[in-house]
Image (cartoon, rainbow, N blue to C red; front, side, top):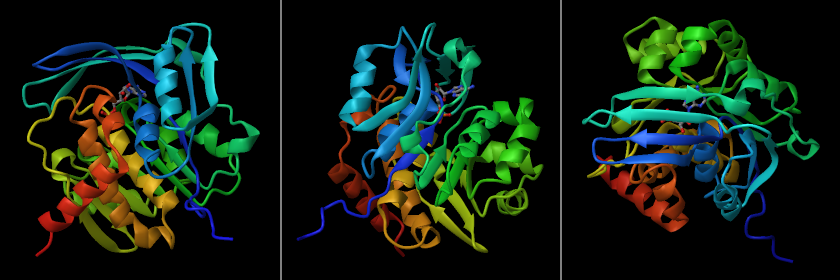
Length: 308
Ligand code: AMP
């Protein structure tokens, strides 16, 4: 008998925020879009591997958003639906589309959220701890049985209000994804190469520093790798690009054969390709319109762009 086409593909567990986002750019304003770090990461990972989602939404969460997760074959057994309101975040971008201001964060059901893993999730080999309070990220790890790869993401908020929890978490993860300003803040170091070195000392073997439209740096095994970002002519809404990058990277790794160390550079390029789709529409609109074939085309384009 021939093996099934996707034999060997492993699953990715993703925990993070599942949110309603109200986003304002200089050109448009869109209220209550499907957002949250886990939503963006889960849809991105779903192009490559089966995804298990851990999060919480309120009774007000639109049924069409649950349907969107299901269209991407995302396992929702770990998504709690609670009395109360879904986490709501609103933000506004400046003309350059890089600087973002948070206008409001309404925690709603997130206030009392404690991630509970269904039994069927506990053996998941690939774990992405997308942006959420580091104590909750640790709580998820407490419930896992020997995952193959654990990668965490974060945001500046946790560096400011939960540094002790974050430092405890970092001792337990294999990889850490953060943006350049967070890396500088965490390492107290302006030079990103030196900052990555300092972050290794906090625990993670793989340190990935995102530089937005300028790509990302991987520091791992004493070596550096620079991933490009796919050059876009127009950015509509970059919200969730970092989460899409991390989700795409983890999804690709779960589907790949061979050691993680060897796969990480190409996984980052795939993550960048998915993130570029994310930026082309509000919320998840453009990401959900992407396809595996369209992602492959952008990866091929990035190969040509960086060959010399
Ligand atoms: P990014 O653009 O990659 O920084 O991610 C934006 C996403 O982060 C949005 O979809 C928000 O819903 C989510 N978000 C914003 N603030 C928080 C927070 N305090 N905790 C968790 N997720 C958040």
